[in-house]
Length: 341
Image (cartoon, rainbow, N blue to C red; front, side, top):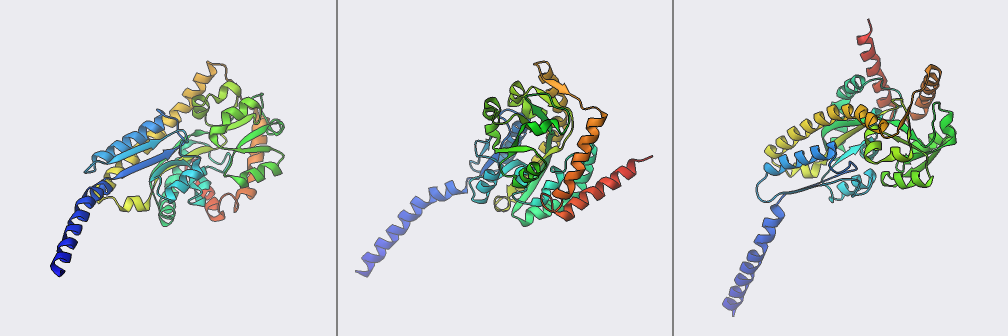
């Protein structure tokens, strides 16, 4: 009786092992799901595809990767949530999404008119990069690359030149940035919180009539057709980073990690170089199709500078941690001093 029971247990064990091996093999196949708001076939999408291909070639078995574009995985806050629960392993995010992970990153994007050139931004970012990446790692994310997407300019239905002109209009505002909306309202502006996918229908219906946007995004999304006036002022840079969850990173071998980091860093360099070049190319393309470029005069530029400086006390400690805010301006001061005659 005992021998029959033992024999039956052995058979059950063999069956479980036989059925389980294919499942274990399948589970061993690596996957990399990357989310982003970037348009399909754009510079950013192509670079993410190259990163995915490099990662795939470094693997054994049957690895799979997907790059989800055009916000198909939701807004940036939603993509961060999906990474936290394992539905995405990585994402290319702007500061809007990155600050949901680490708030201090807002210092690189949410300081209007603080940076006067790409050289200033590069200098400050590189100075802050080690500490910033350590903060992300402590939150469970590895920063693989840094990028940017051009300067924010204001695209509107009607011509506008001064800060006062824009008080008559309704602004697109990121739904996740409640502090920014509060500040705008206190200054007499009208923010309308939306997701990027809602911009075009909202401006077509009149729900909004101003979109702070980079020229490249305005061209790719056709915003300029409905908002054909662009204020030529470099309000703030759109800064981004390619991040992967530490959990996914730790599951990779050191060899795969090295390939992924190298390919991602290369992609970041290409994105920074090409995106900056495409700012003016996008403006030229839109001008040929009817875009009106409005240049503020010296007095109007002074008004914009006064407005930005009045915002800093409201931003410091609220939208940007006070110590990080101070660090940015300390680095800017040092950089400008080094460039002075």
